[in-house]
Amino acid sequence: MNETEAGSLLESLRTVFDGRLLTDAHDVEPFLNDWRRRYRGRTLAVAQPTSTAAVAAIVRWCSANRVAVVAQGGNTGMSGAATPDDSGRSLVVSLTQMSAVRAVDTVNNTITVEAGLTLAGVQDAARAADRLFPLSLASEGSCTIGGNLSTNAGGCQVLRYGNARELCLGVEVVTADGEVWNGLRGLRKDNTGYDLRDLFVGAEGTLGIITAATLKLFPQPAARLTALAAVPSPREALALLQIAQLELGSSLTAFELLSDVCLELVAEAFPQCQRPFAEASPSYVLLECSDPESEAHASERFERVMMQAFDAGLATDAVVADSIARSKALWALRENVSAAEAAFGKAIKHDIAVPISAIADFIEATSAAVESRFPGIRMVVFGHLGDGNLHFNVASATRFGSAQDESRFLAMQEDINRVVHDAVAASGGSISAEHGLGVLRRDESARYKSPVELELMRRIKTVLDPLGIMNPGKVLPPSVLG
Ligand code: FAD
Ligand code: 2HG
Ligand code: ZN
Image (cartoon, rainbow, N blue to C red; front, side, top):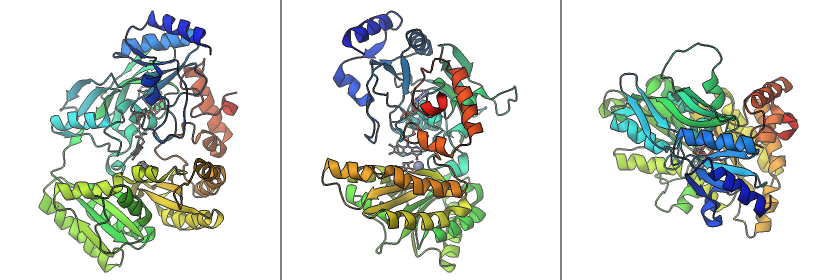
């Protein structure tokens, strides 16, 4: 699009939206790249509405002028879904100025918030009402609840509380033709036909814009205990999971796997975050127990788990955090893995789910297959073992010496994906457990879905967004949309 056309479109947009509109190249820059800096796009401008009515007016204008709408929250997504394409005929609609807490109901145990509130903001508002909002991601200081719902984010507490979809009772949405659907129901039971809420959750902004949500709240646990156990391999980690689930039941709120490479990267990038053991171990498990009674009760139960693990030779060492500071330090080892990996250079990421029973075999066989076929790489394997979700990332074994080195490495992505994703499909798994498809996994996903599933998705997309203006190029490939 040339400058004159862009100028007259912006002038026209101004007649329906008098709020904050960023057009200066410097101001717009942060909205044009994804967190991993794998994608870059262009935009007409960045609109920052402060009300649902303003979002609706903007989308109506986009629909009338055939301008694409790219909703953006904290821009922390891992699949390039919030980055506009390079046509320049997209408007980024940033929701971050819509961050009000609309209501807290401690009897119904619900909170209603605007989409641009950060996840940490939702957690804080819940805490202020003596409740827990359990969704928990390392990006929680920047990601927004609208982005969490639109990606159906997972994180470190899914084992006990479920993913974003399971925590959401209702949504308010601006549809692709600029209508407002108020679906902010705080009901645990509602069987009145097709579940529209669940269409918008996980849609990555391709069906509408979520402007507010009603979410479930839980009681705050009386105590939280965190431990890091050194284990010989993921197989022992899996056996430890079974013991922990039997002993702790629903008090087991996190069960995260880390390979030693992950801790090596974290220690290098964050010198204050060192392994708490004298000797390195091939793998580690980070466990969290949220106890409804007391810290003493939690400790007792945790001790039983660890004694059984040592007796059965499943764990070789363990530390239990005896203070909030120590617990935070253990969590930092886990939460800093992505940032440490990124500091080392770009990685080829896989966000896979397989049945938990298949996970140890999957890690062993698929790591060996990738390592033997692609010399010069190293596996960075970590994730939410308790949910059967691994970040099965492939990084370069050495730092990139030049941009060409990096491109050569990234050029292996398709071949590496084939090995990993074929193994996932053979295990009955999913190639995106929690990060969504965006552009990164759009074509990969279409490859593994059945024609019937793709056709149903195509029909949903074309009915809800007949002009194809909602985040085009994401989730479904053009070959499917026709
Ligand atoms: P954005 O990145 O801005 O957008 C993501 C997608 O949602 C895009 O398709 C966008 O168009 C759409 N969108 C955003 N807001 C709206 C809206 N209001 N209405 C409609 N569509 C919208 N993810 C996990 O699942 N688990 C993790 O453990 C996890 N850990 C992470 C750790 C780090 C360090 C980082 C950087 C990311 C991590 N993520 C994780 C990924 C990311 O934080 C999540 O996907 C998060 O849910 C994205 O929220 P956001 O507000 O940043 O969304
Ligand atoms: C996590 O679990 C996130 O830390 C990010 O989902 C995973 O960086 C990744 O691959
Ligand atoms: Zn994750």
